Amino acid sequence: MRFKKVFGSHFLLVDCIDEEESMKFLRGGL
Image: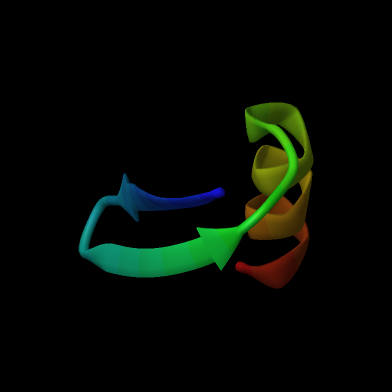
């Protein structure tokens, strides 16, 4: 599923299975 995540001024479009995985990805990527 594709969903938007906004962190401060960072805008990312992430393909993830669930939100927890996306959070790990965002924390590791940013």
